[in-house]
Length: 434
Image 1 (cartoon, rainbow, N blue to C red):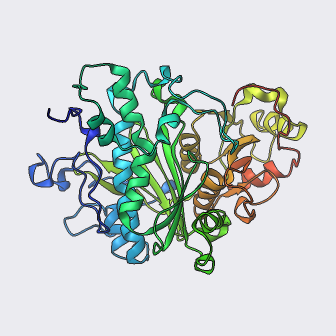
Image 2 (tube, rainbow, N blue to C red):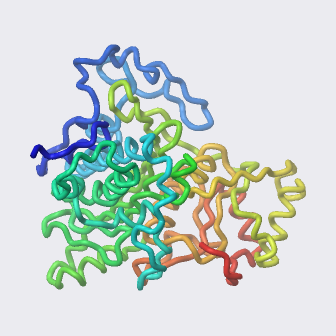
């Protein structure tokens, strides 16, 4: 019997197991068949507000359009080596596939399947698994699941299709990193321990494959977060398990690059290689991430704070005074602040990066390795600050893979004012569900 297939693009195969730079995703039509050229792309003549970068000052590529991500990292824009160029090609490929999956109309009832694998938080202290998280941690490939079922999948059961889609998330990134041949270790928020991939891989990748997955059934933006380190060659003599842990627990100050991908009305990959923060928007007409926000500079002060202030009465006195002060316009900025809170870290942070202000979670909730370090690297490269409410995030040495801490990210002047209130870390959790 012929192997069943899912008749929509997100079900396309993983890239071939090759260490070469990946080709264009098979999910996308070849450029030769496109109805319009890149010159007709909506991004070709895009001009970005000077607050978040000036595209007009950038060199365009050879066909007159804006530079793509692969062109930017491969032709000197980021001044990175060939190994990192290849790695980013595979990360880009993985994120395009995830973008297609989370945008699928078949994901509308994902939130109803929380009983798939049940149970509370694991030994690592991670959150209780959410629908996407539960199956994303599976190492069973998508094609293997299809082959195991000697039945036509399409139309069989909608929830079954959802499970098959969900199981791809963590696997897509793992597969892409393994195929790149450039990654020694991958540490994922979905796994209890890091995975050793390649003795010769020069890089270590830490990632939250799908941040905000609890909100996907409501079509709220989600995201992928990643950080990249150099492999610690000085521990190569140790057993794989031990050296995988040590490589994954590097201080954020040692990051080579970091980034996030926002899956929303647009798919945006924002990254830094240590020389500024830049954002690339996915052009669906070509399948390219196009540089639309070069050299992002977060405003030194904003007018928005992002926090779940339904928990106001659980906060420490210092944080309550700070919020009361800024929303009344009595702080160092005489304008009254507005609250904007999506409860999706990537989305809240992306808005803050562009418009200024502060994104925060005052509880010991967000992960130092997978979330705080990569995002703090990005905001610092944009001229802002990442803090736990007392000290700089990138100065903290991780001691546990899933270590949690309060996280405050934002404009430099807003962050300095916030930290001046001192008592801003919430140390009491009254029992509400994470």
